[in-house]
Image 1 (tube, helix red, strand yellow):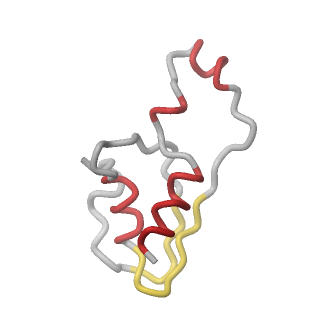
Image 2: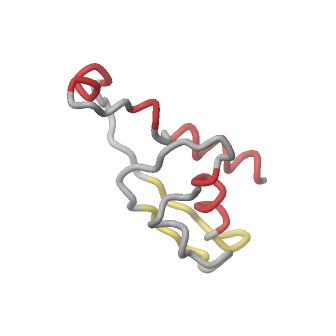
Length: 83
């Protein structure tokens, strides 16, 4: 299921789509990646910004497993599959 913050986006709504959602969970059907890419019109741009140098062990100590969420590489791979 796409994140509730991306679910409302109409398909191909914009040629410029800055993504500012703090974290999107992985799902078996890659719903979040598909929702992000579907919101951008053909030939448009999706700008995705991530935090650099996240300490995975420190995040886990706060109950946050970064591997449960999309990374920059996940979004990049999805965009290449779409092309």
